[in-house]
Image (cartoon, rainbow, N blue to C red; front, side, top):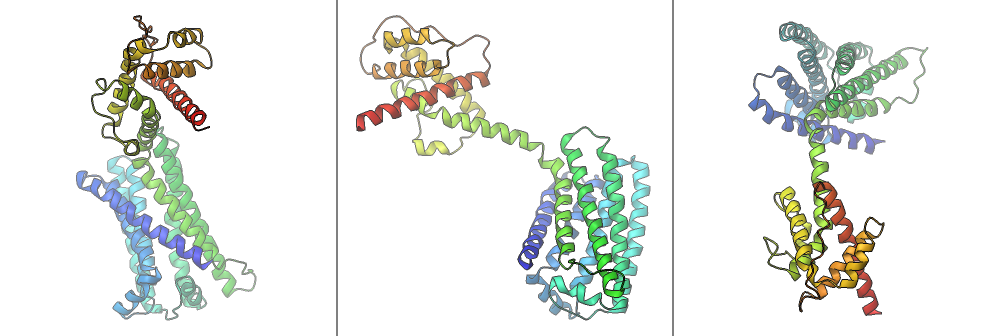
Length: 395
């Protein structure tokens, strides 16, 4: 369980810092965006809260400040700040600018007062029990004064996250953009998990200081809930920025796959008719490297294959041409066309087999994706025929 806690803590710390670094450059471009500024504050203090609690930095901070449990108040103060920042970002998203400014001002003042009281209470109580990150708070809440302090801190978190759940779901119902709606639902879901974390912590406090609440297996459960809720919120706040780009990534991956699958057919044509390609063929191993302007290169590859088919058609075996004409619109048409092209390539070094040209089989209204799909089938059949002949030769 300790390893899982450490893994989730590192994941939240790295994700928070990465989200802050991802959003910060956009703030330089759009300095007037209050929502974006509040989100940067949210990610920054989320990162501070998690990095300060990592064992690798925790001991150094204690020694630097010479104050036991300094990381506890750093983490809790950061959580209050990020909760306020999250509230400000949401009100600017769902309210008109004038109302949003007034609501944001109230949120900042309210959470600012709550933070000042929290720090004062922590200094007055001065918790001194120190252990691992998981155990320190648990050991200190056995003290009744710290338990009251912790209840106050949890109330601040719960109020802020409850408002986030309400505002996020309300806003998600009014928008049509898929990624923004998904993001707001994830923010609401993550905030709901933080509310569960607060409830489990309250249960733990009651279990330690009363006789009518069973302690239960809660020792590590709240950490798991809180970290998953944090990750879900960060996903929700960043998804509207990078989510729409996934469509472009999917298109690029499909084009790269088509570019690679057309490679054997294109290289064979380029070798038989080197005057057709605009650029010489690279080594097959280098073909794994995506070229610049992939869309253009894929388009050129399709055109050059078609030009090569027409140029080499007069070298094709007449019997292969006849079989291809009979196979039109049949399941194995691509295989017959690949066989015809192979017969043309075998005759490319000699004289033309016949004077007639193979009729252009390219429909006038075919789209580029359809043509890529058709040529990909031919390329696969071409490669399959080559493998069979090689196997027979070795046999």
